[in-house]
Amino acid sequence: MRGIYIQFKVIHALIMRELQTRFGRENIGFLWFVGEPALFCLGVTVVWTAIRPPYENGLPMTAIVLTGYVPLTMWRHCIARSVAAFMANGSLMYHRQVTTTDIIISRMIIEILGAICAGIVIYFGAYFLGYISAPEKYDMLIIGLIYQSVFCFSSGLLIAPLSEKSDILEKALGIISYLSIPLSGAFVMVDWIPEKYRWILMSSPSVEGVEMIRDGQFGYHAHAHYNIIYSTWINIVLLIIGMKLTFDARKSIRLE
Image (cartoon, rainbow, N blue to C red; front, side):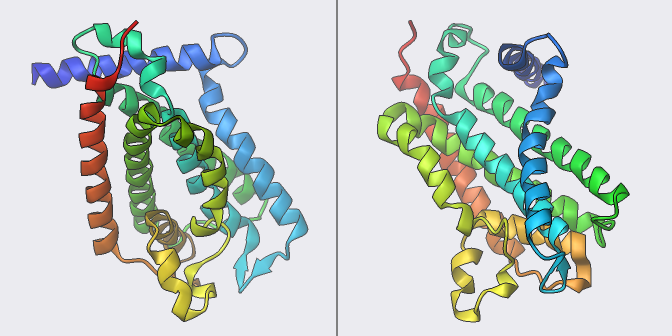
């Protein structure tokens, strides 16, 4: 229990250090960890609401974009902050209590909580303006957010050690994140795709999480497609692989 408490304190200290390093203490300071993703999500939501029809396949466009782009922003920010994470914090690993896993956990907590809080802020704004209604199933909405968060955390565990070994991955990651947008389920539901092609989207853990979130938002007004058993197992496999790579990464990090 004492070891767990120490690691909790280490992660807390890393989070505070990361917030101060990235956002400083001036103006609104660390609140930018919510403001940054909120600006991304707000801009896309406003533009799509303005240029697209109010309803897409019987569902409100604002809710479609918001329930899809917030999870996408979470994932993209997580993988972006995972690149070269060990190199940027290598000096901290002179301390025995600081591990590679602590570094990734602290960064992923910031990005995941930032995206969720940003989504909540924009959601309430859209709700009071009448562009979105209250969720039909809060439990399913929360479950979807949990699965998406686990997938984003797993992605961070995978990208961080791999980016230390390959400069090509670091350079290509921005392109990969853009090309993966059609496979993220951000702007389309699986039910809108011809049945013979649905398996392509449903192979993505991100789509599974987004579909759960939309099931929570729309309930019986939409036909969401997801497989919780598949989502659970694929996330477990990704977590195991990511943890193994992250544990082994310390051996190849050169501290200067």
